[in-house]
Amino acid sequence: MPEGGTFPADGILVGGLNLQADESTLTGEAMPVRKHAFGGELYNGETPVDNHYWGAAGTRLLTGEARQRLVFTGGETLYGQIVRSAREGQHERTPLQHAIGALVAGLVVIAVLICMALAATRYYQGFWRA
Image 1 (cartoon, rainbow, N blue to C red):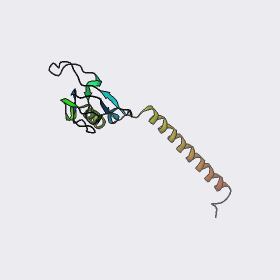
Image 2 (image 1 turned 135 degrees about the vertical axis):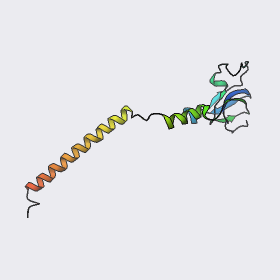
Image 3 (image 1 turned 30 degrees about the vertical axis):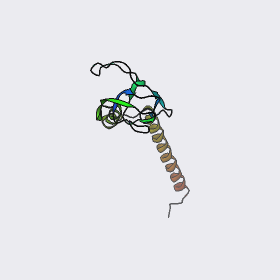
Image 4 (image 1 turned 120 degrees about the horizontal axis):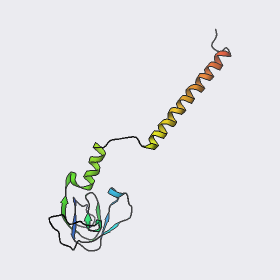
């Protein structure tokens, strides 16, 4: 993968020097992350690999030229899992949303009571009598 390219899928970096990746699409971290080529042996893809040796789909290679052995593609990637979670996950209200909802409901009740009090005051002052 050339410098400036995007990782096509999740996989182990098996070659490259002075690698840095922009993982802000997944982590939100603005700083580049240093990556290294994995020098150990892979056993049927079950070898646990540290994040420093991993290239994730949707992230960009900033420096160097990397070779990657693809392990996960499509919906199996971390990016795919995030998308699936956003689509299928329950969208429960957060505590902040509950608090804001209660505040808005309270303010609406107060506004209605103030409007009714003003209308009653104007009525008793004779503004709606013929």
